[in-house]
Image (cartoon, rainbow, N blue to C red; front, side, top):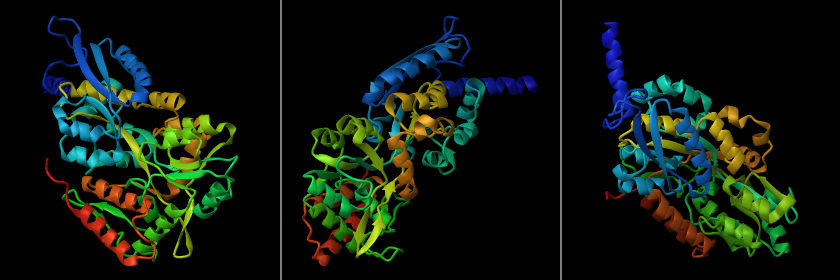
Length: 431
């Protein structure tokens, strides 16, 4: 019986390490009797290519006794991963990184390999850890963001996919940056601008979250918004929109296109901007010793100061469910997200670790951007929305940024909110 169990486990392992049987069990013989030849493809952000290649090299060396491994590294932004993967899942890389708000759509499309079951056994046998160990090693929010219906579908990679206020302390004081009112006044007096991305549902939702409104994913893939009503905090969506219009109408305000924050910082026109850790280097280069970062300001709603909310996001690394070498891909995904490599990410790219041990270092806790993110995290939520949310939310934000709504025309504002809510509620059209 023991021999039978051992044989069954070995067979299961060989299947799990190579979903289509192209490569066998690590340590097993290849077709010519020697080590296996294993080919994997991995996608990562353009700015991370050199760093990722180093991680690949150490991975290949670690498992050299089992196989001759080659990993082809390609460029793919975490922000665009879902769209490109879902265009052709089979043609996508074996391992890829993505933003946590994409998880539901990727799971529903069958693009993510579940990490329980066979993959858990692979990790235990060859990496010396279990899925439970992966979960316990990372902050709870990142694990929740990588989980759907109780199953872990990705490895947490970072806990810094959120935003806060970066500013030039030679222009803006610690007191000025506490509210949008004082911030814009100080910027205007200095002939500078304050930047914010209004035409994005990731950023503009922060005003509604701060006032107590919510977003939720529907079973059919649509999004439920309550922004056209009254929040539990007693504010109406019209009042929040009026507050956003007041900010946008200020001469010191600069509406920034999504993805253009670094360019705006480098331009010298802005003295403060809402962005994330990915722009910390640009801010340091532009403002030098005057570079500072802190939580988002409060904003005025119906005569009251309300703390602006935010989205607490994470970046994850997944295994393609259609990978021919799912087991090897799982080991690679685990390797590039382990404690040591999360430390390397921080050292080389200032990417905030989700791994609790990596995040506990003095270097991380003393980092200006990471400290600001931690301060803002008290007001952040994990945004779970459907694919139909993004375009209507961006259009709504653009209307505000361009002054297409009058703050005194409450009926028009209400209509715009109603249109937004209806537009996001519809499930994404089948492709």
